[in-house]
Length: 322
Image (tube, rainbow, N blue to C red):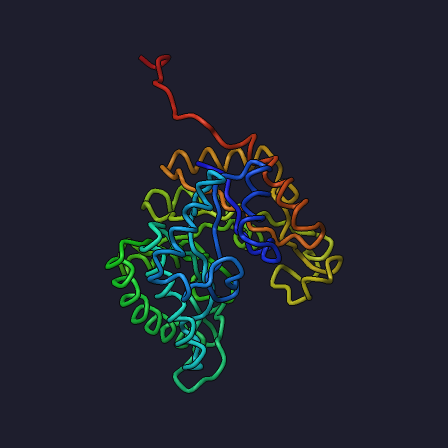
């Protein structure tokens, strides 16, 4: 297991400068945006596709800083009811998979997407309850749309030998572990989780239990190191389904926080230990979205906590049990 960073907060810098900075603060890997919400500040997906010279230059730059790419990121909505929006998201995702294969990167991170509630609707619809019954019918329709799309996408990923890591995210169809397993079981094992605990904390999901659940099925393809803090003075009044603007921090029920500012170091050591128990040895990719601090300070504080949590060596023999 190693510490990585999703480089989006450093998009104003060149990739060379970003890698130099991350190398200096003890980071060993990067997750790089190539489309969708993460953008493509550091890698122009279409420019790199099929261009062996650009790809070789990228590998040289990574080698210079002793850095690896944990994943290419393209988070968008390929299930959107607007055909143009869905087609753009689908093209981004398929091309990201193709580029990952060319770069020998074995994972692409993304969202499941979210359809409308019916074939004639125009807006994605996040269903959170089965009643009134038209909501249950809408949810069934959404899963039919999703399974049809993701079955084909999973074959595309398998053809290229790339895992697709879906971030369980509210306002997407797959937002919790049982939904993640439902999609995986309906498609193939290329489909798994980009396990981001920040979205699970405020849903009252036990993150360590969720790691064990998905890990037992070898369904964790990537991991986002991102924390969340619930502020009970707000959540006691209005719950956690909070539409308050993210910039209105004092009035929100919860906020994304830097590692250690939502849950303490002991918790993160438990997270790391449980990931090791289930056989995950990939990146802990820090995603900075803490509005109470700068990107660099948030990243550096997260690295500081994770460096004390991550094991640098392989487990030894349990000689005491012989």
